[in-house]
Length: 518
Image (cartoon, rainbow, N blue to C red; front, side, top):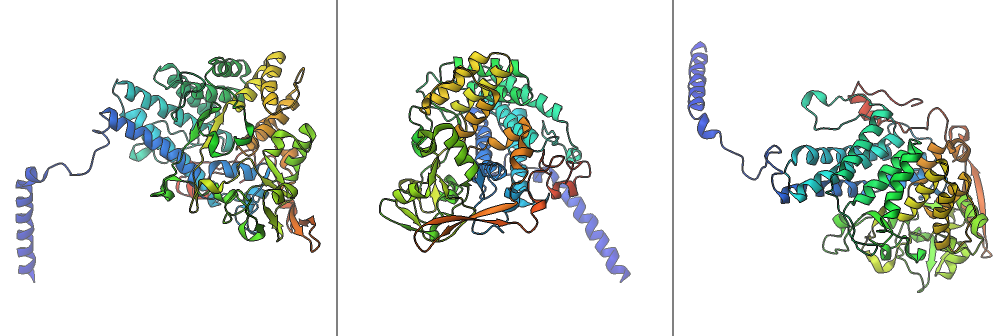
């Protein structure tokens, strides 16, 4: 036995000698693999890097049931989740009964940091001086700023990751809200001042890229959220005065594929109608917004598919807000929300009871049969449009003491909505106009929180939920059901100002302090 070990030891020593003598021959580059340190040296490689940022943003939009704007709509007072039954998981978002381990919020949080990582790669590794490389870095800074805007307004003191982390930096602690706003401002100023961002040649020019004016609009919005009203007004006026954007004349197509890259689009997430690769290039979240298939009978006049899922039904509160401002036949209302009578006139008749339904359906983002590829749908998702710029600027101008300018901007939006102009506007006027104009576009919840209106508007959310009952005589009534734990539902001050950091993140990172109340 001892001899065996000795022989084995000699053999091992011999093997090490042979390997050592051959080490230079084995030290060869890997094939089909590129080192991050030697990549991003050409324009094509820089373009690949920033393309990953565009792709990461699309991932945030494609995450079925975990989509960044849909979750924000669940949190708002404008839409119900409206799935198959009120016990479905997303109703915890709708009712504010979710905990820090809910997957919906975790997915968005993780995908925001994936976008930040891809942005950091470009910002650090693309060091060339060509126009393409400079543009890639500038765009990556805008992407990083956008991701941190979502984080700081929804999660507050999230970890700041402004560079590629070394192995000993992964347990990053919370930052502060002030530090994150400073990073957002710095990134956007750098991008704007770089001279490298795309600019449209005129109002009818089209581009899918991040533009200088979008970066200015996001910076103006960031200033406004911080109550830096003078800076916000000035920056947003830069976009307005550029003359490169305008309200599209026809509001009726504002949420359909016909409005893709219109004169109103500041920035969009794009999809391809590619039936050879529909799953990768399209989005099922839009399909989830159509009618719940089995609950309707359809005629040939129905414009949409019949296999959609029925999420995001408008609340009675948003419908009443439309009616109060523009009447039951308002142009913008009729192109935003359907009533039961509207639905029937379009060729879809409810034949089964509808969960979380007060008798209203989304028409603004209607799914069109003509644009379907199987279960997939490919309209652009607007990240920001010009109407939002005008309304942000109106708020900034009013708060900065320029009431006349504020009224001018609000009235541009009202004129397109076929409403009379106002001689002057109050903050309440701007809040109403913004709610109606940007209905369903993922901005309402953050506004309610920053305005201090969340407790009043969302405090009882989910305590009761409606069902549209189909009666035997062809009429429809709304039945309300009290939640068994109604006292646990609704937005709570001291807790819901910020979303929770995902439980898994807190568990693996002892340096993260959970937000209050969670």
